[in-house]
Image (cartoon, rainbow, N blue to C red; front, top):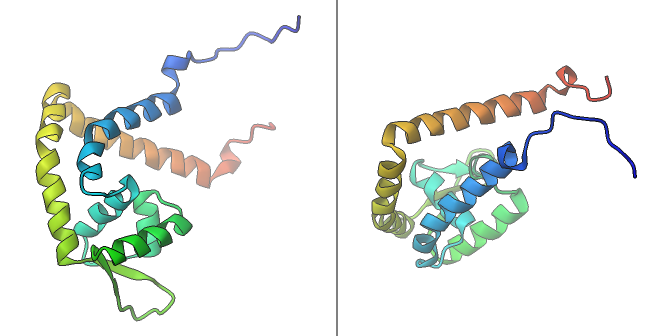
Length: 160
């Protein structure tokens, strides 16, 4: 029998990626019925949500903001345009694909938001509104920290 050296390995339940995945799944299950009831996918909802807060966004910004790969975003644009939820917007830079939410898209966004708000408030009430706000701030800081580590890999060379 081959023995491995003793390591200080975190328990599975304390694994950050697993905890984040489980949290994502649990919160998605809470809100997905509202999105499903309007024949939207979760990625389509993320695009609609991002566009509802902006005049227009380019594909690269939406890809980053919504965490969607560009090929998938192209399919999402096509489906949402066919439904009349988004429209292409003229841009001085012809290489940029700019889109904006339509009136129909904004109305759908508002409807889903109104329907899901009681569940969001229930979650915030159960978890604590201040704790939820702090958690969101901490998650954004954690994301920025992790991105910084990925972007400067020289500081962490596993071969050393």
